[in-house]
Image (cartoon, rainbow, N blue to C red; front, side):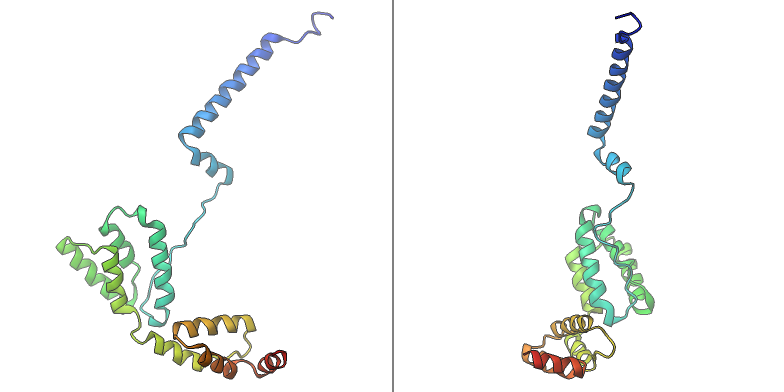
Length: 194
């Protein structure tokens, strides 16, 4: 073997040292900030629970918004340092002429007194003012006029079941209303199939 055919051991060692230094730096970075590498790799933020948005005072939509807000608060509870941050985050989502005015007055009261309600107290207070007193009656009234029309059957049944649960209907009454409100051709098929 001639001298020009032998590998350059010095150059090979130099490249290996460089790779070891680069890998060591990458390991150190991962140990110090593991999330940074994940963010670089995926370059996107995963939002576990979406912000529920605001409540404009429409009591028919309160239940849906309220459960989303409570789940959002639970998912982000550790992000709130104190009752002030939690209260302002929740109250600032109340909008419109009624809910917005309530929030404005409540925020002003809390600010002036320096007392911010704990989460459980704030939940009870908001439910007292905005949860429909006759939610069960409202759901029962809605279900009486809830017909399938051109709606897909699975969408109709899902909506119907939600209203029957919200209205606290017993199975027998719910079945009676379902029979009355479903498209006649589908009711006939259900009877034929048993």
